[in-house]
Length: 208
Ligand SMILES: CSCCC(=O)C(=O)COP(=O)(O)O
Ligand SMILES: [Zn+2]
Image (cartoon, rainbow, N blue to C red; front, side, top):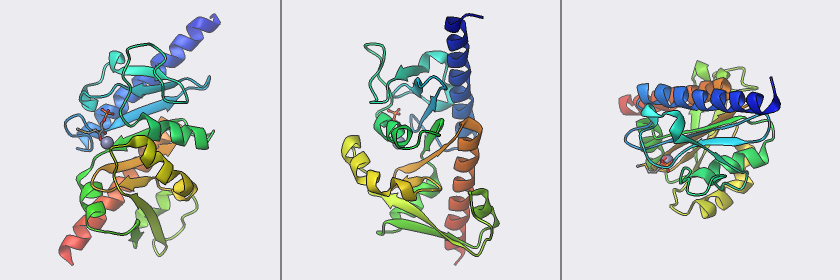
């Protein structure tokens, strides 16, 4: 197999993983309307990301485009996700990261609006152990919350100094979550764990 074919197969595989992830997030109700965006960094450094707009539960290969590490579309005329800068920020900071997910769950949206503070705290849940280094439900985990901003470059600048302290990802207030992992299965698992914890916390607060 020549190098060109290998690269194309790698791209097809990355695009398929993004399409599958979109369907999965949609099944869970985390990408309503045109919300959410999904990206993958390939082994050769190329970055595949969803086009801006469109429903992420109904993606095809046409909806996955290539960007560079600065967030610019490689092909003129392609319009990548409006939040591309938050994906490339993670890739730029963490060389081992291979996939980034963003969704708009009800739990993340509501809980982040219910606090004025810069974090949500999760404590008492066995699933906290889904995150690296966590061994007990008794730990108090801090999930950073950033004020939402339509200016993504400005938002990224505000996140930058805190990014080292986001082991579970982070939440944008009234907007949604960002989660990432070494590969797509890891990113999906972290995102799912985070959403489970947020959903538990929302329901728990309603009962209190
Ligand atoms: C109607 S959702 C508003 C934009 C957004 O927050 C989002 O996640 C989707 O934006 P994209 O440009 O990636 O489609
Ligand atoms: Zn969004």
